[in-house]
Each structure stands twice: as structure tokens, then as C-alpha cells.
Image 1 (tube, one colour):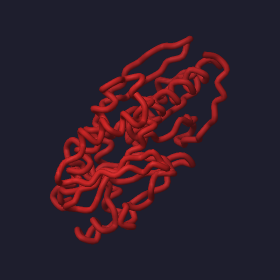
Image 2 (image 1 turned 90 degrees about the vertical axis):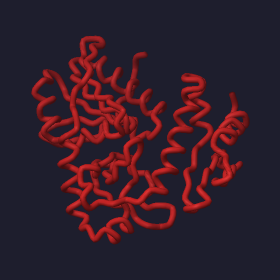
Image 3 (image 1 turned 45 degrees about the horizontal axis):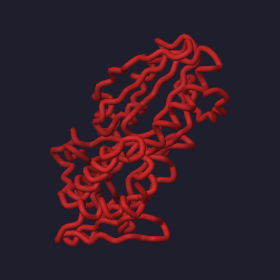
Length: 262
């Protein structure tokens, strides 16, 4: 599978009379736009091709699903009032766009040097990032949205799976509800996890659908964490950061781990 074949495959599965599909040869990107709203989604073909070599047709299915649901969300009306339980925070990289394509700024907050907090309205199978236009239409103050979102994040399940590698323990939170990385904002959860740690607590959010917490007990553990975070980052549908974070005194500090072993 190469970029040209991937382009044809996606065009055949995503093109219909209600959409415009265009290809940017210089950037090797495919743009799928709704004729009704004028809004669309751009996907980078190189990354999808790379995932295809590992996951085959599953990689294509995921992109098609992401685009279909994303376009549907753009066409739905967002109503914050009386739907407070649908408001959640989401973690993104600091390089993620600060505004919608129409130039409307998203509601954001600083988090770490590598990550930023956005706010979303849940639509079931997908969600829509809240921007200033939505707030103005609803007459909502940003602080109200942020408070409700963080409260809702604390209500999300925090069950983890445990794995041991080279004497280090790794905990994985991977529910695929779209808010796995958002659990990093649940301070109570992080404090509870810290009590289980006997070594150094290291946290990673390589993409939106996973949160990794490591109990690093020897140098080998740092290598494993670095490789793990990079692998998840490369395969995630919404990558965040391949860097990990030291968790000390309630603070997250990005660290760069130079792996030596494989």
C-alpha cells in the first residue's frame, strides 16, 4: 500500500454527492468537506499508510469512521444548557490548532509545556470542540464550562490494567471513550495512584485514547516507558505527545528519556 492507493481507497469510501473531496499533492493530504456546512476534515495520507502496514484494513476503517462521525458532528447543533453532563475536557498537543477553520478560537487552558486543555461537547460516538461562537450563542461564561468539564472528568471510570516489565510496573487506562487522556486532569486519581507507587511516578498521554502511569524502579523502566510512549504516539488517531512526565508534589514535569536498550 502506498499513498496513491490509499488516496483512491479513501476517496471511494468517503466521496458522495453531499461532499467535496480534494487532494493536496504538496502536503499529501486528503480534504473531505460537507457541501451543506462548508466544513471539513483533512487527513494526512502518510500516517495512514504507516498504520496500514501494522493494522491493515483496520487502519482504513478507523479513518473512515473518524471522518464520518466528525462530519456528522459538525452538522449537529450544540446545546450546552440542560446538557451539562455532555461537557468534558480533552487533552491536545500545544501544536494543535487554536481555532476552528473559520477563524473562531477554541476555548482552551494551559496545562504543561507539551499539552493544552480544550473543552468538548459529547455527541455520543464523537465530540465537538467548544469555541467562542458556541459560548456566545449559548450565553455561557468560559469559567462555567471549565468548572463543569473538570467535574465531569472526575466522574469518569479510572480502572487500570497492570503489566510488569523488567521489574517496573505499568498501569494502562484505555476505555476508548475519547477521554482516556483527560483522566490526567483528575487530581484525586493521580494522588491515589501515587500512593501505589514505590519508585518514581511517570505519566504519559501519547494519544487521546490512552493514559499510562509507570512505577519506575530501575533505569530499564525509563527505556521501556520511552519506547512505549513513542509506539502509542505513532499509532494514535489523535496523537498528543511522545514525551513522558514526572509526577511530583502534584505537578507534571515533561522529561526527555533517551532510550538505550530495545
